[in-house]
Length: 205
Image (tube, rainbow, N blue to C red; front, side):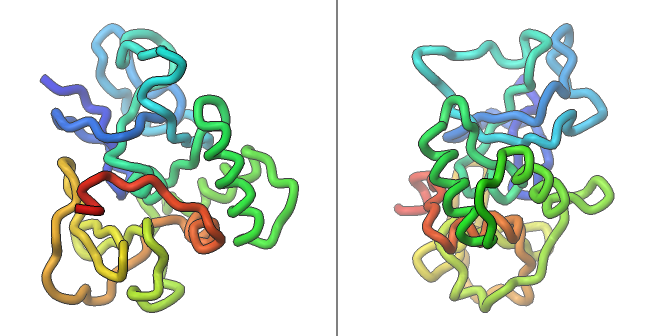
């Protein structure tokens, strides 16, 4: 049986045999004895995106009382859910993200804690995923942005939209009718300022 540790673009955590390109965490939210999630879905405002393997280290999943290993299809998915790059295992990416975040949001010298505080407000609405109005027409959103329509999530890339799935992205026919922004606005501004999210290979095929 697959563990409940796969994150959707809306931030939900479900069980599926698919894993994805990145891991990450929101603190300790599981019971290592049963390897199941607790009722809470975060224990820290620092929601980060990590490498699945770092310096030869591979963590046993949900096997100890340490941070709960979560998995994402790609970085665009983790951004949509409200995560940011890890400053430990992804230091260079995290520094590039922070620089773009500062440029896009008109601040300087921002700490990881300060970014986390902004992201925590933007990703949640009374414990549920916060959706935002699009700041520009859909076609003008940068590659790596994710939007929501109804129950479906979509990636914007190369001037088109792709339907998100646990296995990867698939083509979508027809225009979207009044989609809402999933990617937190501050993260979107970082993408607009030059940070390029890592996309699943299916987004380029």
